[in-house]
Amino acid sequence: MTLEVLLAKKRGFCSGVKRAIRIVEESLDDAQKDERTTPLYVLNEIVHNKVVVQELKKKGVSFITQKELVNLKPQESLVFSAHGVSPSVRQTAKDAKLRIIDATCPLVDFVHKSARQHLEQGFQIVYIGHANHDEVEGVLGEGEIHLVESISDVDELIQSDKISATAPVVWLSQTTLSVSDTQNIVEHLRRNLPNLVEPQSECICRATQERQDAARTLAKEVGEQGAIIVVGSKNSSNTQRLADLTRSLGVDTIQIDVVTELDLAQIKKYQRIGITSGASVPDYIVDEVLATLLPL
Ligand code: SF4
Image 1: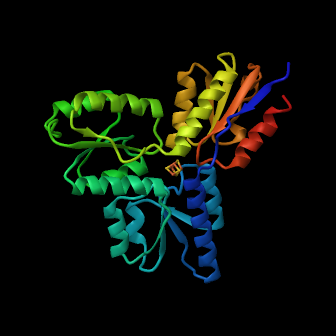
Image 2: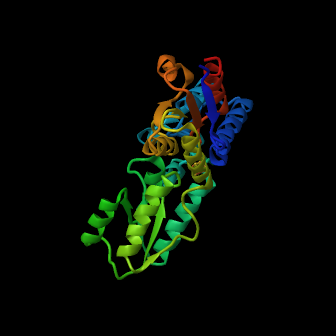
Image 3: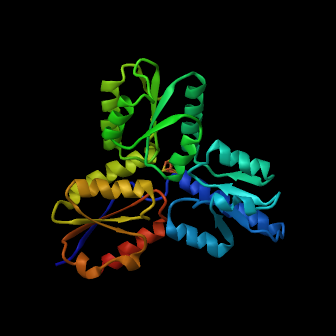
């Protein structure tokens, strides 16, 4: 019995990830041409993918945490990742006279701008996102913004005195959430906050939406007797949402970073396998998975 392998129509690198990696690679080239002895620093992971980070480390990039910022010297180069940073981190880097290279995805930047504008106009902001994610930490740093992760968080917020149901309030969200989970939370906000205003445009980015739509279609094609391999790192929000989605549709879901993590004996139990990948996953990893599965 030959294994049938299907690929999601939309998968892999999004424009924001491609741009961020290109910025780091170009900055590294520039630094090396200048014969600079200092390394190129990147604050946090440039994108949430272990393989991408390892490859850049091998080329000479140093990844640092926020706490390590104080160790950098004036004029050293620091890249902000695709997930963006809070205004206070930006200010710390400026005060330290670092050479800032900003690889924040323009769509993440748009949410920051929208948060700032609404705060200036006196709006209360409810922000749907996952606590401790780099992008979320950055946006929350824009001011008094109420983070909710679930419908019960919304109820808790409304029952508290942190938000006024009679004052204007706008909702915003992390760019890489589950489209359907976010819709449910927004519906709940609409029912409970009569002065709720919609954001000027979608916060969940098109790349995230397209990859979730394609994963939904793939799950239907594969069926409940098949399985889906989601390629991507566990700390990648959009990858995690793809895996959540295919699991919620009743399809066995296997999440891996690299092809060597595949259990081929497990794969052989299925007649049909679908493959998708998160927005921070290089295509060649999916090609390696495909090359491993096709002879089975
Ligand atoms: S997933 Fe969307 S928001 Fe995140 S880097 Fe890609 S395009 Fe930008």
